Length: 218
Ligand SMILES: [Mg+2]
Image (cartoon, rainbow, N blue to C red; front, side, top):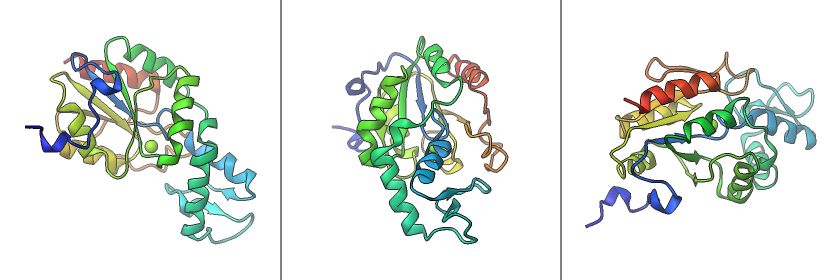
């Protein structure tokens, strides 16, 4: 009988990943790609200001010169528009492409992104264009349950990288054997992003790749 936990989780083999290799699960926005910069450029093109002065998203969108941020509902419409039309234009984080190429020699790489469904085609094309691994899952909500279902398919070590503590904590709770790492790509966001002793925080991709390699070699 199939494990009920796995029924809604993609099979590694269907994603082109071998259960015989360590698994590295990596986020896109603010990890592999400079989301805040790309979203800010998109907002500027729409006539808005994106102020990165606190660790927030919708609360950082303003009409030019305004004292109060845009209503959250309007920000969400802009966010959905960005993912439908412009998420393929973000820049890869410096060092990320080389780091994943290096990790991919010994591990399977799976991209786990909480982008909305309309991003799938552009996000997949973005990975391909930059020579990044193409096994992609678009998820909604905390990433622990899907990560647990994925790593349950392999006895090999696994690692998980994300910028957001709720996702990292969710993975630590649902899949405690997975090594978790926090990475914040945007230099403006780094001093604002909450960190936790639970997850090593490594904002340099070369250093992060070394730490992941050490964790999955155990
Ligand atoms: Mg992210």
